[in-house]
Image (cartoon, rainbow, N blue to C red; front, side):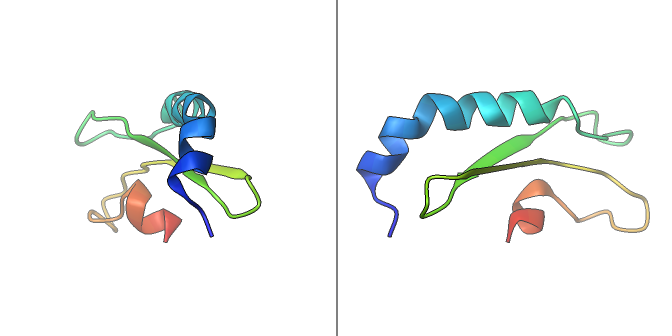
Length: 66
C-alpha cells in the first residue's frame, strides 16, 4: 500500500516526471498541456500527458491513467 511517506520521499521525482512528459502533450484545441505522474506500490513512476483528438474530446491524462 502506498502511504504519505512514500509520496513525500518521491515528490521531486514525481513532479519532474510530470513536467518532463508534459512536453509530449498534443493539445491543438485547448492549448493547455498537462502532465501527470503516478507512484506504484513497487515505487515505479508512471507518467502520461494529455492528447486531444476530435473523435475523443473528453479523454484526458487522468482517465488514461485509470
